[in-house]
Length: 122
Image (cartoon, rainbow, N blue to C red):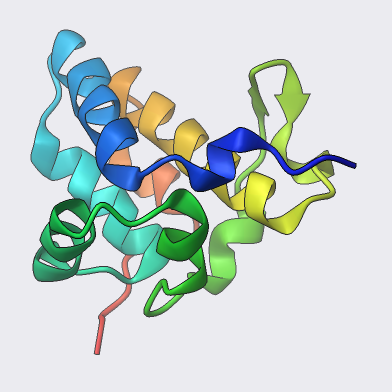
């Protein structure tokens, strides 16, 4: 299978779209950052660093400080594909993030978005 071009897309080029989607629906950048932190383990400084360094999505996920073990609990359909059935691990990680940002934008309760609850980074 050919390598998907989204893997080489910078996280900095995608992130503003996540924030804009949430803000259009009355939600905040802080909520988007919260779910990114929950999923990947990046703290605010880490998110700022990957944005400033123009890190690719592939590197963003490969270098995630603390991938949440509850990520596999994320289920649903994004772009016509069930995230739990995506076979490419990197594409699945990208779609997990897409899906939980969509859930923020739709106003789903944070306790539901954070399957398994909060976690302390550390």
